[in-house]
Amino acid sequence: MRVAYFSDSLPPIADGVSRTLCRLVETLLEDHVDFRFFSAVKPGPEHPWTGRVHKVPSIPFPPYPDYRIGLPLPGLLDRLVEDFRPDVVHVVSPTPLGMYGLDVARRRGVPVVGSFHTDFVSYLPFYGLGGLEFQAWRYLRWFYNRCRTTFAPSADTRARLLRFGIPRVGLWERGIDRRAFSPAFRSEELRQRLGAARRPILLYVGRLVREKNLLDLVAAADWLARRGDTFTLVLVGDGPMGAELRRLLPAAHFAGFQQGADLARWYASADLFVFPSTTETFGNVILEAFASGLPVVAVDRGGVRDLVRPGENGVVARAGVPEDLGLHIHELLSHPDTLRQLGAGALRTAAQYQWPVVNRRLLDGYRELLPKTARAA
Image (cartoon, rainbow, N blue to C red; front, side, top):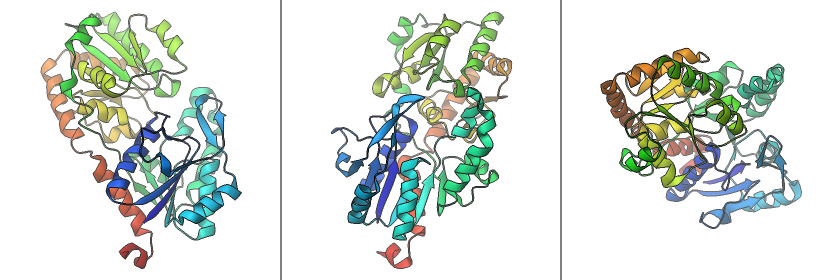
C-alpha cells in the first residue's frame, strides 16, 4: 500500500498535528507501508524519513508566522504524484495543499481520506469573528464531504462533525509514549527551585492563546488565592498572550516552551494538571499528564471529555465558570488521598492509549477503501 499525505505541518513545527504525524510515520515504517509527504515544511536530517518529504513553495500564516501555507504548483506536484502512484491520498488540513490533494485523488481515481485535527471554527468567537462560523462550517462541509472518510481524534469531535453535516466520520485517536512521560522524572530540585517543596504545584501546558480559555485560569487562580489556598501555578508554553498573562499572574512561574526530558520533568514534578480549554478536539497534553501520574481538572466541553473520567483520573468543571474550576481544584488540594487515587487512575488510563494500536486502526481504515484485489496484495 502506498499513501500520499498532504500536510502543512511537519517538523520543525512542534504542534499536535506534527507530533501525531511523526508517530504515524513510525508505524508506517514498522509495517512497511510506502508513503510520501507533500508539505510546506521539511524535517531536518534527524528524521531519517525526511527523504520521503517533498517541500512545496509556501507563505507565512499571518496570525502565527512560524506556520506556513503550502502553495501547490500543479505541474511539479502532478509529476511527483504520478511517479509515486499512491493507492490512498490523505489530506491533513483543509488548506490549499489539502484541496490539491482532493483534486489529484479525483483525477487519479484513488480514495481520499481526511483528518480533522484542529477546531478552528471554535476559535473565531475568541477573536471577535463569531459571525463567520456559518461560512466556516459551510466550507468544511464542502471540503470533507469530498473525502471517503474523515477521521476525528475523539468521539466528542466525531459527534460534532456529524452534527454539522459532515458524514462518514471515523475515529483515529492519539497515543502516548510512556517511556517519555513518567512519574519517575519527578524532580525535587526543580520544586525547591520554585519554592514549592511543601506546597502543591498546579500545572498548565499548552500555547498561551485566548482559545485555551486562559482568562478562566486567571480568574480561578485569583479565586483560590482569595480563599487563602497556597499553591504555585506553573505555565509551560508560549504564545501571543504571554505578556498579558505575566501581568495578570505575577505570582505564577512561566517556564516557556519546553520539550523532551525537560517537559517530562515539569509534568512529573507537579501535583495537579489544570486545563480550562473548551476547544480541544482530543487533548494530547491530557495524556501526557496522565502518563506522568497527574490527575486532571478539565471542563465539560470538547474532546477532553472522552479522556477525563470524574472519580477515576480527574474531575470536570463547568466550562466558562472560573469559580467552579477553582472549587474543584480546592477540593482536590484539600484531600491528598483522593489526589493520589486519581493519580493512580491517570496512569491506568494512559496505558490504554498506545500509538501503534491507534495508528494501525487508521491503516485498517485505508485498506477498507481499497479494491479487494489491492487489499489482498
